[in-house]
Image 1 (cartoon, chains in turn blue, cyan):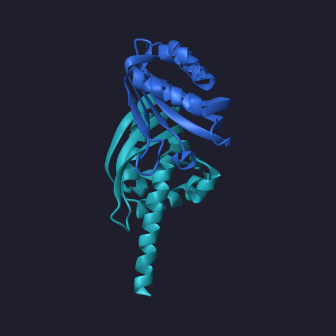
Image 2: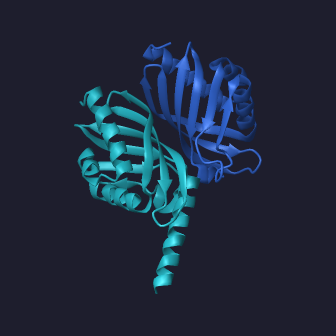
Image 3: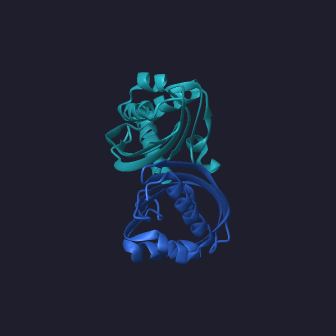
Length: 130
Length: 148
């Protein structure tokens, strides 16, 4: 999959699944050898992490879906170059455990091969996230 | 409209200039009406406050370069489409007034017009940045107290 339209369609479905917590759709979107990383220093941010392999990524996706609910999602930037996409997005995040709600902005760098995500690197406000 | 190759060269040059503390290249690369924002909660204070205009942005770069020297700089990813670029780069950060040194990764989304950056939105490890800045400020305060 290197056609721009196909990549754009794939990415938009991926984010719809993430916002909805649709685990079946997410499972189908990540490759067996996928990795998902939240960029940051593990010494100062508890969210900085790296999940590798389909099972590891899905386990992390499930944890995120169980802990956070997303509302008012908006894709602010979508830069597509070959089989890579960079996405800047904003959402209101509801923390299930604490009941806290905040609006925040994130950035993701995604690599797609054979119609599935093989690499997903996320940047978020680690000071806000804790 | 700026050509893809031109945007790629501009972005690579600006990232390298930021890491090297090359203010001349930074000054030339940003438009007079440019905006710069580090994505983050307003609770981040000055770190996440939006900046507008060439002078404000250059002042911030000068301050960052003075307090947080960067080393071992490398561009990890660079995407260009139309007049937009998204870049991911890595560097070692060392507090100028402390011995703290760590590797960190930064993501930037840029819009380019007439060969200059008009919009820069940056994502960094805000928890790490606050930590390094706190330690740098604490070391500076201790030195100031020693001298007084």
